[in-house]
Image (tube, rainbow, N blue to C red; front, side, top):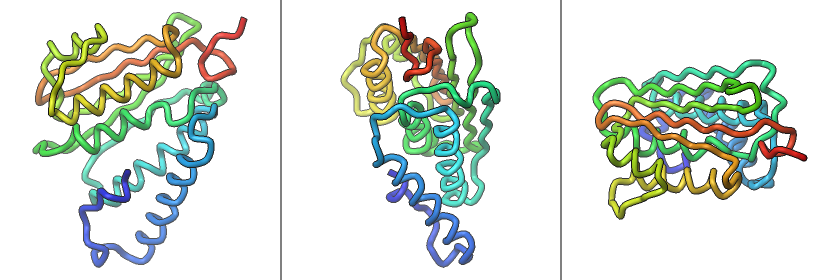
Length: 196
């Protein structure tokens, strides 16, 4: 969790920064603990994401750029809570580790084929060999000590656990350049599952 990831000494923060960071951290922890496997709106996920990114900006002293694109009409759609959290956290904990360029994170949601929600999460971190990404797309996970791959494996497993065959996940990556995740879910009012 973010509470173990501080890179700046507390003496470097102003009282206002410390207060805002504590508030953001409390919000993140409370959101994660309260009914962690529940169903929430994308608006709630967006509010969590803003707090998480603010905390990371504070920690890294504005050392990264982020872009979030979510159409207003998507805000009341319902998904599993903390749906994208493992992917975002994986970028910061593993993907951006030891890169020399400025870290960048992009998150975009759009309608795909009229009745499916597509979430795209992209970072310019360490990436992975294209052959490994291809294996992930086939559900093949080799034994590895690469923490970036392990983090993605766990995140992908969580999506499939929640949505089973209704979710489509595509991993694109190039070593030392980027990783891009496509998550496609059926649109409905109940956690992305179609109601019949």
